[in-house]
Length: 317
Image 1 (cartoon, rainbow, N blue to C red):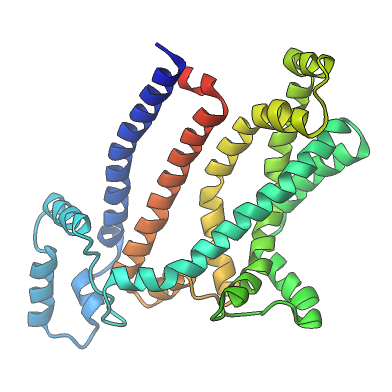
Image 2: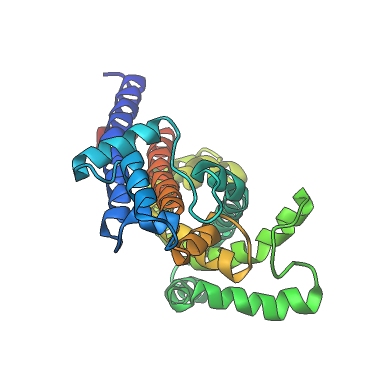
């Protein structure tokens, strides 16, 4: 099989593997309402609802059917884009998610960008100063930041950066693009401080191995140096483990988004998830959890496809 054929086969396999994984995700999210105490219909309608209203909604949502029947009913509604109605606002869950999606996307994108921008130079510096004080500093800091709560880092940045300078808002998402950029800087920095050293440590280990490889020595012998050597020989061949690690860290990233949206009062999916959970808005909780779970699956799929583009040898595994 040719190299391109191997890539297409790998991509096809990964796409097919995603289908049962997504079904498993929908099943787990569906079970949220099953493990919650009380009647979900009663929770949705509130304590003032009559028994007849509860029975009607239970029948409408299929809660009076078997668990398997309820799951297939949920799956059918999901395929039609129907996630139900918010018990608090009366709006559709889809519209609630759409209203709060943008701040979360901005925050996640800013965090990933800052993580990569910080991790690459840190890893390169540590790799080229192997076993030096900079290298030891990176390895030590990657351990230390694991014990720093992201909300505490966010509060420190508010106290010592946002309040004294006034450069960044301490809450809200703003109205304009400039406001959005300013509002996500500090929470993104809080998350990137936790992610970047871990990713940099993985990237540093790969770079050390690549720097000692025969093909890098051969490239240097033929006169390749500087940015060309770094970009085409070193960085590209070092990225695979770091990309895999960053994909694995998406769960931590989304948890951090939930915490920091509450800390900075950014009304994204994370803060809405907390609000819905506290208010026992089961369908909104279920819908946002489903979005986060699908996002984790999608990011890991994209990471695998990116690995194929970076390193064709991945298709052989």
